[in-house]
Image 1: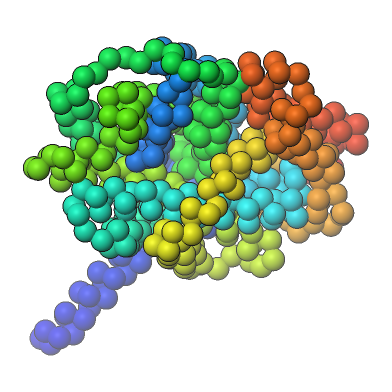
Image 2: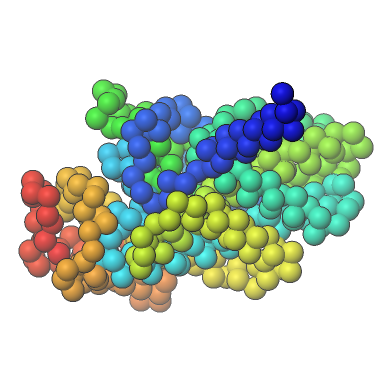
Length: 461
C-alpha cells in the first residue's frame, strides 16, 4: 500500500469537503432542499446581527429622552417597522431570491443595478466602520496595535461569510449565549463599581427625530436584507402558521436594540461614555471576557454587512453577465479585504456623513418595493421571470418607481425645510417621505396600466 497516495487522497477528500461547504448560490434561487431554516433560527440570526459593538450608541443618541421615553420610542419604532420588515421576510420565503433581484420588477433592471451598486458600497462602509470600532476597543482592552485587531476581526468575518448562511446560522446560534454572558459581565461590573440610576429626560428632544434615529439605525435599515436571509427558511407554502416567521426578524433586531440601548444609556449616565465595552480596560481578568464579547458582537453584525454586500454586488454583475459558480466566494474575499483596508487606514471617518444619510435612500426603496410586491405583483411573479432580459424600455427603468423614489428621497432629505413642524418633530420624517413616495408609485403604476393582481406570468411594465 502506498501511504503517500492514501495521504494525498485523504487531503483531497478533506479539501473537497471544505469546497462543498463554501456557499456558491449567488443570486440564483435557493434550492428547496436548502430551505430549512426555522423561524426561531431566523430570530437568533437577526438578534445577533443587530447586537453590534456599536448598537449601545443608541443609548447615547437618545440620552436626552431618558430611559422611559427611550423604551416607548423603541416600541413605537417596532410597531412602525415590523410590517415592512415582515413582508420582506415573507418575500424571501415566497420566492427564494435576494431583494435586489426582485427589485428588477419594481425599479427595472437599470434601477435595480444602481441600487445594487449603491448598497454594496454602503454595506462595505458599515463593515469597515464596525471593524474599525471593534479593533479600537480590542486594542484598548489588550493594549496592542489596532491594525492587528482590524485584520484579525476582518479575516474571521471573511472566512465565516465564505461558508454562507448555513454556517453563519450555526455560528450565531452557538455563540449567542457566550456573547450575552460577556456583555452581562460588563453590565454587572458597571452596576458594582458605579452609581446607577435610570436617567430621566434631561434635555431637548423631539419624538420625530428620535424615532427616525431608531428606524434608520435598526429595523428599516435592515429590512430589505431580511429576504436575503429568509430565502433559506422553510417555504411559505409549507407552513400553516406564518405569524412567527413574519415577526421573527424584526423582533430579533429590536430586542437587541432595546437591551443594548439600555446598557448604552446606563453606561452613558454612569461613566459619561456609551461604550460599556471600554470598561474591559479596567478589569484585570475579566477584560479578556469583555474583549471576546466585543469581538463576537463585531463579527455577528459585520457578517450581516459583508454577506448582503456580496449578494448585492453579484446582483449588479448579473445585470451584464451570467453568474459563475465561484463568483460569490471571490466577491466575499475581495470586498472583505477592501473593507478591512478602509478600517486600517481610517478612511471611514471621512464617509460617516454619507453612511448617516443613507436611511433617506433605504426607506423609500423599501416601502416602494413592499407596495409593488404586495399590491402590484400580488406575489405572483414567477421567479424565472426576474432573470428574463428586458425587451421594453419600461423593463429597463420603471418610471412610476423612479418618480416615487425621488419624491420620497426629496421629502426625507429636505422635508424639514418646507413641511410643517408636525411632520418632523412628531412624526419620523423618513417614514413620512417613504409613505408618500410609495403612494405616488402605486397611483402612477395603476394609471400607467400595470396589472394589479394579474394571474398571468407576465406583468406589464
